[in-house]
Image (cartoon, rainbow, N blue to C red; front, side, top):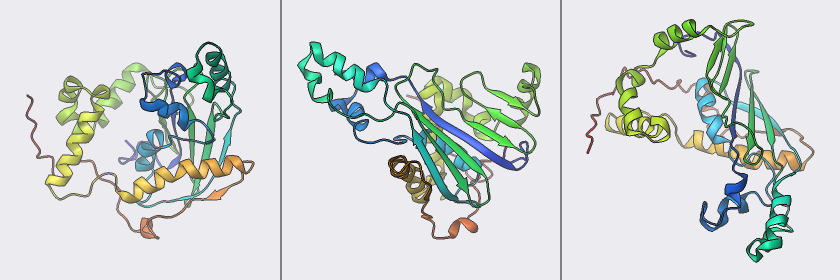
Length: 271
């Protein structure tokens, strides 16, 4: 829809990882060696930006026509993890090493401005009792869409599109990769079929000699938001420049193409 101009000029996008994992963070079995709980100790920022950031960067042609300029980041205090650690330590010595630790703020909000004057908002919260959301909001000069919390919605003005219009738009703008593999992906599964689609797309690009949808420059940029957000939070949310890992190549790099005009020949054998 973005490529075909439905939203007009993209102005602003939002992404997030909002997932109530408080009990899981303290579970002895859920995460190996308590890695997720340990990750939340002494690091205050957006520790998982890529989940929400990746899709909107591709929609906004980040590294391929636009580039991040600077960011600011702010975290709340921790109102939950430290309290739970102390509570659990009373009845279980296993949790005593965690009882006196300083935990990451429950929610982090990071905002980014691009060289073209567009904005991105990211949030990270894995402790609050909130509905699961990656937000995935796209806002442009002609319309907007929001995926989470479900159900997904689209608007071209002050009101959401009616269900009938939403269905019509969905049918009109369904990408070729979904038409080709959508039903098979749902049957095979993996996060609702997303895992299968990504694996197939990567394989198809490699087999046909096509550029992959995410390269090392995307990986470096998206991942850099974590330490940059930590640094901003620790400095009263002052702004920080975002490094240009493409060394200026973003000005001439071509946008990602998922239209299957090339490739699309990889077959699937189900065992």
